[in-house]
Length: 307
Image (tube, rainbow, N blue to C red; front, side, top):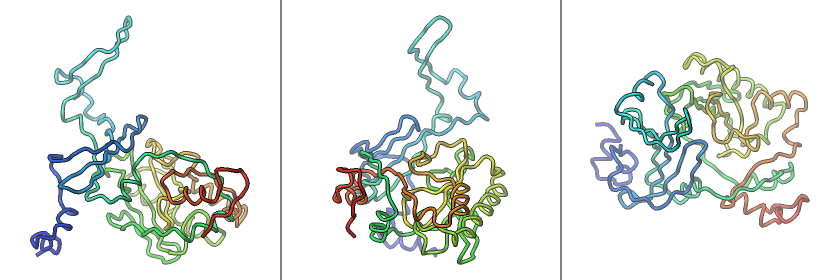
């Protein structure tokens, strides 16, 4: 008998919650909308399911243009909101088959999940190399599980695994989002990269692009490949997204194109160990509190962040 099935039959409630596949939101109680992005058509709901906290990420799915004719039938209701000569604006209500919303469910959710997805005030930080040295070693994040692997290079120094990000449904390639996670454990972020990192970075770029071309038939010219700073977790990883997809975190305040990173290091081997890096922090993050407690937001001069 399958190990997971045995656990379910044994009455292990925690495993039951983690393995349960929902067929509806019956019994779900909404507590609050903790985040919303009208441009990206997303919302994050904090609620309760079976007496435990739950986080639901809602996202409008892209139009299925192969079946676009489904929208133009008597099943699509129209409500006029504006009429000006030949121009009319309507709220359209398409048939159920074309009205799906993607929902990512985290259940049971922890307080850390709630904090992560709650919309918060954001603050700009201009981080000097010495500021980085003072706080980075105090932040510990576990590496995400490497399931659903699309490609793997097992080399301990230059190898990585390539897998879909949770934000991608793995069907709509126009919203393709993959992450390459390196096997090495001594690289936490962009700050750690130098000349010795070039073989790893070049390998990720070359083999990652080829794997996506071979698997999804998407060429390098249609992909954004970049590194987040600050990253969401401190085990080095690289993002691959379709240029059509407006990925969260692709702004100038966070994303660094991998090709540019490689070029900068080729020009100056210690580029990212010396460069002042600009990024946003949110007011409930530990990192924001470290900068705030050190008086960073009260002055423009470099401050000391206590370890």
